[in-house]
Length: 287
Image 1 (cartoon, rainbow, N blue to C red):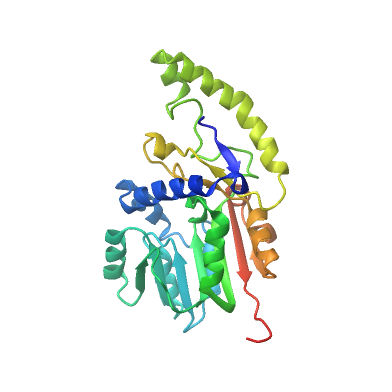
Image 2 (image 1 turned 135 degrees about the horizontal axis):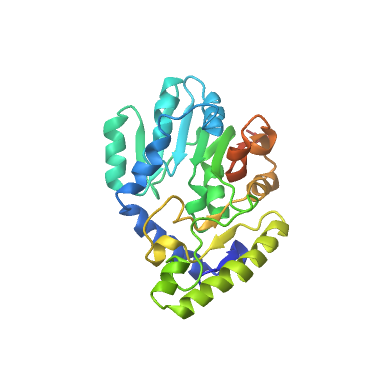
């Protein structure tokens, strides 16, 4: 079933493990265009184009430590260092991390899964949350890596409350276009495609919109794991929603310093497809 969208709580441990392993394999050797596309944001840190990135960078102070989880090409690093901060990044690809070390010799880079013995003033996640099969576990890792009193900054797509379907979702039995299926006389695939598009997808959208916070919808069948060529977010397995992210941290007693819902000056186009949460981890009395 192609349109296989479920709440995280509905998945077994084995399902999450299999999906996580498939993603890890993909990210260790991604298509050549993958990080080139991701790096297009490097020179676009302006309030109009990347308002959430700009707000996050504004929180960096001289001497502060910043960890980016899922750093990719680490375009955040130059802005952190310009503010006098110390940057560290985590990602899967050894080759990519080595390239980052050459480009940013004053920063530190580690493979995902490495043990880090220190906590950080700011833990950042920029368009990484949609690529994890277990969002609560991922958010918990950000929490643990942040020092008490520190900040957690998350920027990701808004895939639930944007009036559309995530790019990783495909209809029918294959990711091919509907007219292509018809032209090749793949009639069962075309029929399944039509049913998904016209009946099952709208039903899911209504269900997702009214789901209480904490749903964390997972796409078990992303396009790129079923033979599709890579395009932006065709690999997204988690369909983020700001309400779910805030729900997770509110349960921990954290404060929301800033969210995309509190930034009316940001353009409607940005707010429709993207969300931002800046969370402060509380300091316990004993700390």
